[in-house]
Length: 217
Image (tube, rainbow, N blue to C red; front, side, top):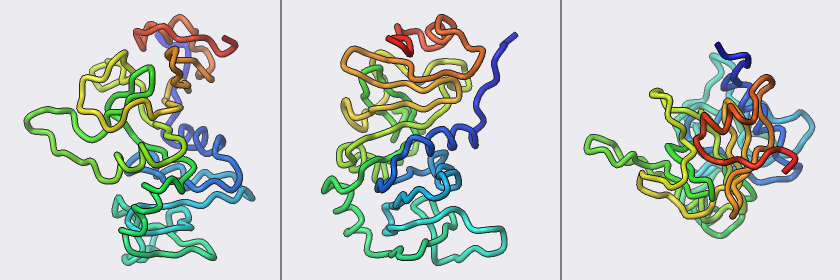
């Protein structure tokens, strides 16, 4: 029986949000990363970007106050903060490709220990490719962070020595935020930044199946 409690999706979103610095321009990918917008620290100015053409995006609106004309790239209703703007998606992709974003937070199917990212297809015959703007973000943002569950539904680690799924980007991921722990991807492999209380370092290594440098290493 586990003696530790996994981070919920909301707790994981809070953990990611806590690391985003003042003044950062940030893109939140489709799926779990969109939750980060609801947990940004009060008083910290962070400018959220969406590839469908929004800058200055706010959190999700209260129920019943959704504007059907104001959505993010995942077709979720969002808000626009004072000073925010929306524009053609070609301009949005120019921002992404031109290195104007400090951080992008993406989901993933697999991430290698050295930061290779696979998040657009599993390569299965019936898989629906969903690359969106992920490749542009992965190479264009100054830092790429991944937010995901550590294990698949079958109990296999999504952090691997080498990705077996089609790649989105090579060596682009700096950090991996999971429900078990937070990792840094380095040229020497994985390093643990933090882990949930009660989860021993050795147990985490067994789950991932790779060597992990400890927090103080």
